[in-house]
Length: 119
Image 1: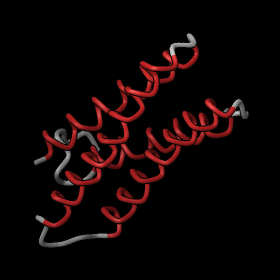
Image 2: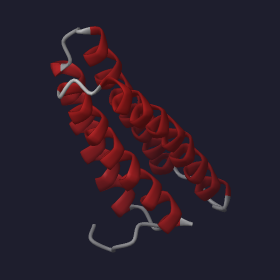
Image 3: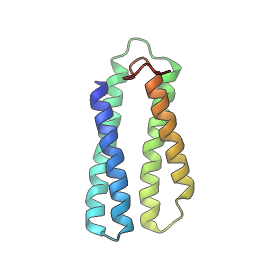
């Protein structure tokens, strides 16, 4: 289960940076296609996350925090792309994206289902 979840969010991150670079280089059609595929991966990330959480027998506050952080990360990814397309400033959303991403990854590795026992 965790492998599917990690694979979907890694692909989503790659698609996010590809979509952003396509937009910055002025390639409108490939940007739109990549952005739509990324939105599909948002759903896959959320779906695999729900799959993991529903398989747990004991859901602690840390899991709830991880869910909130994960949704915040996805929200900031979408805000960066949409505001870039509209020509609005994105600095605040980039900062929030990186903070949310780092916190989500750290918490994910700390939880019992994390792949590594680092923390």
